Length: 114
Image 1 (cartoon, rainbow, N blue to C red):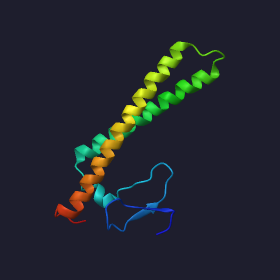
Image 2: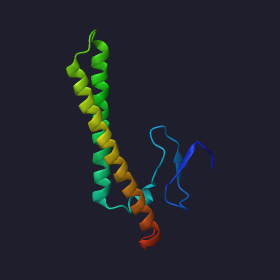
Image 3: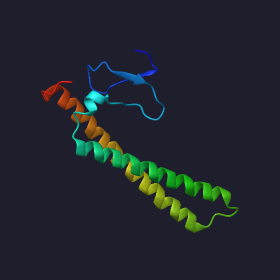
Image 4: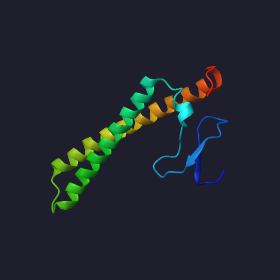
């Protein structure tokens, strides 16, 4: 396999996709369906919350760059937003790890074929 392809995280799965700069791991559609719907939904919500927090931090940074003199209140606002962004990133990462673990476990031990 070349470096421009990502392989499904489930061992021995031969499915690949074109490499993308936005992520480094991938679960194919066949194995993604093996994950509980509620867990998939939680992961999607956490990822969306992280993207919103990231956008909020970027907006605050743009606002600060546009100002000639940055007030302390803006630093406090950015600090709170950055803390929330890190919290949402950790949450999304934990849920991704749970999704990976469940996909692998069910692919090998669940008795459910693809």
